[in-house]
Image (cartoon, rainbow, N blue to C red; front, side, top):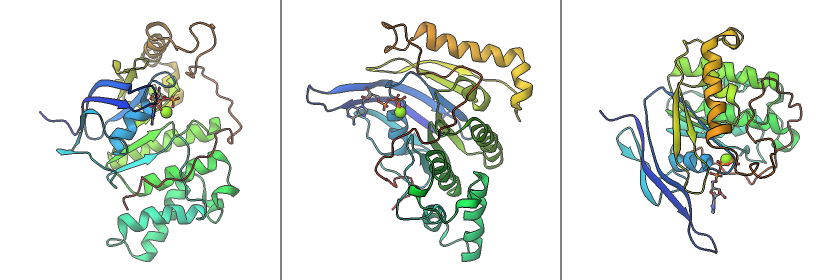
Amino acid sequence: MNSYLTLSHVTIDFPTPSGPFRALDKVQLDIEKGEFISLIGHSGCGKSTVLNIIAGLHQATEGGVILNGKEVREPGPDRAVVFQNHSLLPWLTAYENVELAVKQVYKNTKSKQEMREWIEHNLELVHMSHALDKRPDELSGGMKQRVGIARALSMEPKVMLMDEPFGALDALTRAHMQDSLMEIQAELNNTVIMITHDVDESVLLSDRIVMMTNGPAATIGEILKVELERPRDRLQLAEQPEYNHYRAEVVRFLHERYKNPESQSSGDTTDIDSSNEKTKGNEDHKEDEKPVLYAVNE
Ligand SMILES: Nc1ncnc2c1ncn2[C@@H]1O[C@H](COP(=O)(O)OP(=O)(O)OP(=O)(O)O)[C@@H](O)[C@H]1O
Ligand SMILES: [Mg+2]
C-alpha cells in the first residue's frame, strides 16, 4: 500500500569549501494522511533540512519525497511552512501578512467579506486580534511567530510543516497554541510534521515521534508510536503512567542512546528541553532573519 507522504532514501550533500557535507543519509519514512509526526533530535542533526526537503526548498541529492502520488520538486500551497524564525514581510501588517496567503489560496472561492472574516478568525486563534494593524518591527518575537502560524493555518494546507513553532513563546501561550493545534488538526485532519526540542510537547501532540540520530549523515534512529487516546488533556495525561512511559522513552533515546554531541565532553546540559516547567518569558530571544515567503506559492 502506498502511504500519503513518503520520504524515500532521502540523502543530501551540501557543498562546502572543504567538499560535500552529508547532512542526511537515507532517511526513510512513510506518513499517513492526518498523522501528527514530531521530529526530535539534537541541534544540528538535520531536522530543518528534512522539513525543507518536504517543503520543496531543498532537493535531495539522492532519493526524494512523494506526496499523494507526486514527487515534490518545489514549494506549493498544499504544504505550508512555519519557519524556525518567523518569515513575515516587514512592510505589511499582521493582517496583511495573513491576507497575502489567504488571497492566493481563496481568491476564486471566497468573497471579500468571507476572506476578511477568515483572516480575522485565524489571527484570533493565535490571540493576535489586538494587533492586526501592527507591522513586524512593532511585534515581539513570539507575536511574530503567532502571525506566522496564523498565516500557515489560514491556507488550510494538506500538510503543515512546523519548525519549532512554539519555541519562542511563553509557557501559557505555548500551552494554548498546542491545544489549538490539536483541535484544528482534529477538525481538518491535515497532516502535521513538527520539529520540537520539547519532550512533553512531542508526546502530547504526536501520533508518532521520529527520533533522529546525530549528524553528520543523520538518519532516523527510532520511531515511537504514541497510542494515547484523543482528545488529549494535558492535566489528565500528566498523571497517566502511559504518558510518563512515552516521555521516558524519548528522554532515554536522547540522553542515553544518542547524547548531545556538543555536551558529551563538557558534561554540559543538553539542548533538549525535558523539564516540566517552562518559564520562558522573553519572546524576543530569536534573531530576525531575512523574510521569505516560500510558504505561499507565487
Ligand atoms: N545550506 C547548507 N550548507 C551547508 N551545510 C548545511 C546547510 N544547511 C544545513 N547544513 C548543515 O546540515 C546539518 C543539519 O542542519 P539543520 O539546520 O537541518 O539542523 P537542525 O537539526 O534543524 O538543528 P537545530 O535544532 O539547531 O535547528 C548541520 O550540520 C548544518 O550545519
Ligand atoms: Mg533547525
